[in-house]
Amino acid sequence: MDAGLFTANNVWMMVCTGLVFFMHLGFSFLEIGLTRQKNTVNILFKNVFIICVGLLLYYVGGFNLMYPGFEDGDFGFLKFAGVGIGAPENGMTPEYADGGYTWWTDFLFQGMFAATAATIVSGAVAERIKLGSFMLFTIVYVGLVYPIVGSWQWGGGFLSSLEFGEAEGFYDFAGSTLVHSVGGWGALIAIYLLGARIGKFGEDGKPKAIPGHNLPLTAAGVLILWLGWFGFNGGSVLSADPELTSLVLVTTSLAAAAGGVSAFITSLLAYKNYDLTMFLNGILGGLVGITAGADQMSPNEAVIIGLLAGIIIVAGVALIDKLKLDDPVGAVAVHLICGIWGTLAVGIFGQMAGFDQFIVQLAGVGAAATFCSITGFIILFAIKKVAGLRVSEQEELEGLDINEHGMDAYADFRMNQH
Image 1 (tube, rainbow, N blue to C red):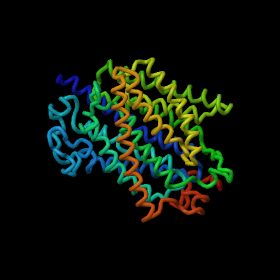
Image 2: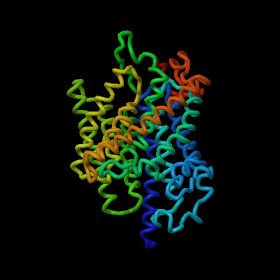
Image 3: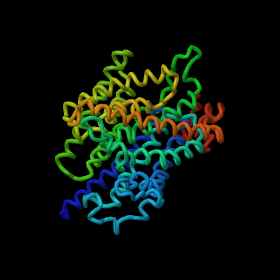
Image 4: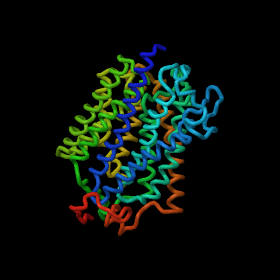
């Protein structure tokens, strides 16, 4: 490969790596804005823990577990040393990725994705989970479950070669299922086992609003996430190809914009108010929805996918409430339900549209759902029995910041919120 193109590919992917890393600040702002002041330190601690431990876990074993060498029989996960064993000399062997970029670039870019699954869970379980229990869950889920599911597709596993009729292989460009739904299934199981926050559902069973303490931070978080998605999807081109990269950024932005507009209009028609949180989650729903097929869709199709994702967000949030599940940030509706939608959309729209491809996409969704739900339940149920999942009623009422961390996020403006 031409040295200039090799360098351009690496530079672009490293820029995208930085953008995906920046998304963790967006997730942090989103989560603390939509929850109460008394739990801010706890949420920030969890998100910093996730990125630090997630990257280390991906180094220790996750990278090799995700790319085990199914095709050549070199089951790299047996090496158990991340990039430390079996890496090409200097990470620049031309054979790696057809000489498109270095081994080290790929490791770091993919490592940024690894922690996202647990970050999705963090928001859903906010304000009532024990910190130690959450950290233990993160270690197992990010260290094992995420890379195993990723290996089925991106590592050359059975989903990548799944055939039905004329369809050849499951398709998930940047992770509507392999990243977002993996986190979404974990979040769904977690909120089921945890139960709702005190005061979320009244004696009549109807959901009660528990307002977040800082909507400006929430808005900032969503806009940071939108920016980070340029790296999330743009970097998944795995090259600096100008035409394909430009298309991906266009479809990503259009789906986000359409998702936001659709969600606020749907919410307005349903609830007769201009709900900022629905608007913001609609943007995220559009982003998750386009992620599976951002490189396959035309701009018009991206808008349609986003518009439908916005409707799905409003319906999904209502469904979660009806099931008496408590998701403070709407993570299940955004990442799980819109992740499923985006994955199936590959079989409905774009270059791969067709009944056969839709069935393959559905099979991929089912495989991830089964594995993540079962493993997530086993992990969380075991933790619940051994260490417990939920803080005491008194700790929840007083706030996790004081009880888990011994500090306030806003020490000069402490408010006793219950």
